[in-house]
Image (cartoon, rainbow, N blue to C red):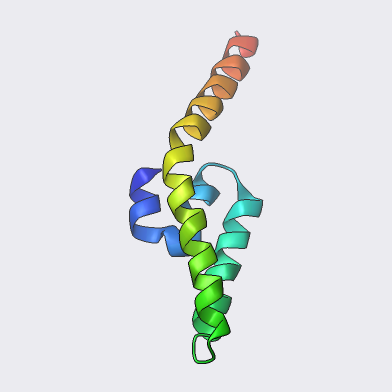
Length: 80
């Protein structure tokens, strides 16, 4: 998840990987709209919002991974 965050955070790849599709689409849209409107000044506000969100995600990834692992363990335990 951290490798995806580091290399592909502009596309929200780490959130797609972690099953957070809504957050991933939101980050992807902010990134695209930010670069598309960077010619006019408003794009920089979109990119700043996206950057803050991605930075916060860096601190949230361990908890999200832990929660996903616990849910997977619970599902696998229920199967046996």
